[in-house]
Image (tube, rainbow, N blue to C red; front, side, top):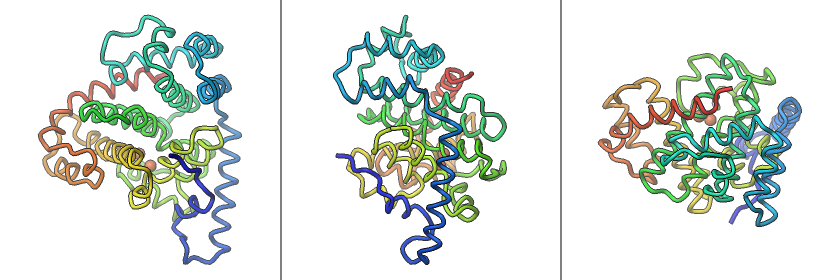
Amino acid sequence: MTRPLSEASLRECLWFGEGAPEEVAERAAESLAASVARASGLKPFPAVAQHVLSLLAKHDVDARTLHETLEKDPVLATRVLRVASSPAYNPGRPYVSLEQALVRLGNRAVGELVAGVAAMGVFSDASGVGEVVRSHCASVAAIARVIGTERRFRGVGRAFLAALLHDVGKLMLVAVGEFDYSPEMLQRPDECHIRERLALGYDHAAVGASVLREWGLDDSLVRLVAFHHQPGHVYSFDPLEVQIAAYLRLADAIEYAFRLDPETPDPDRLDGLVNHEANTYVSLSAAGLAALWPRFREEIDALRSAFAR
Ligand SMILES: [Fe+2]
Ligand SMILES: [Fe+2]
């Protein structure tokens, strides 16, 4: 069961919390609203992707109709096929055509794929810091896919999509010039949102969630993005969502470690990942996680090139 993210829930993302003076919390909510309006005006969601998602939400739509709709945006259609054929998404034989991919994937997976690819496509012109964040998102998605497949997690498609979109708020803040990320900030997990809150009164998780809602993506995804830095809050989600959030948070933490140790994981960092709060739901052993390192490398490379301009 999904519940819409209320304004009150969104405000709880902010550090001001319940005890803060009301006008301060209001000012933060107003700046957030203004920031989201600027961001989504500057970076609209592709109309064809929106159409595909609305078809999938309303009817039992067939693959042929989806194909005809998707082909109206050739760049999006090509990217969808490329990502669907990447080993992170499809370990079997590559699809010979978009139509074949749509039939084999099924509507649910097609919706997840189109939403993720379209959202990343909005930022295909990102450079500098934006490019670093975009690569991070693609890498976290590849890692979420690898660990989800390894653990035979039934929410692996959702975890992939949530991972792909989790830091979309950072891309928005960069695009509208709202916040300057230093390279050091981008090297540490669970760091940027603290800096953003101190400087702006809200963070990239809140911006990302609001923009995804503005784009018409579903409430569950909005909630996963809104709270990806607040694990305490996540426990109130439904059980599958709690697990998806855990896969996302663990994949996020693994990505930072992987960047530091691309060949072999450092034993202390490996220990930190195995004892990460999110691993309670994923249950990877140190040996099991270390054994996945080469697959992370392969699938990160494949997914990044699938997303390349
Ligand atoms: Fe984040
Ligand atoms: Fe992240």
